[in-house]
Length: 108
Image (cartoon, rainbow, N blue to C red; front, top):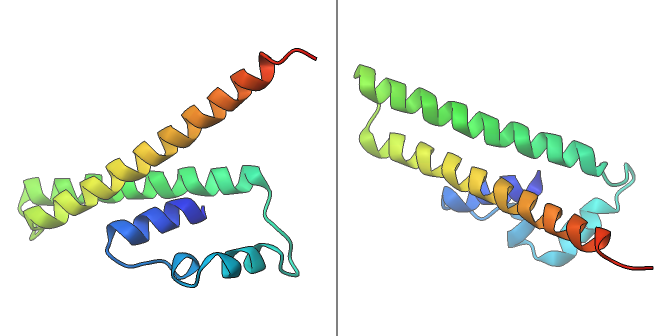
């Protein structure tokens, strides 16, 4: 979830607080009183955020085509945000599959 949020912040030109404060603050936040979130929840939230960005892009492109006051640059920005988020999630999936394949090919 933080990776997608970081990507969304970087694409909008705003550096997320977890990156701006440095690596020590991100580790401190993970070891808080509530404890770290389960990995499956992080993946579910990340996929949900990618879906939201795609829906926003679809809505802005539809607004551009309908002529309801959406500028071309707004549609392009929304489309690029969705594209970058999807590419990031695809890269994470590919790395996870690659790691799984390496573990399965190990001989014990």
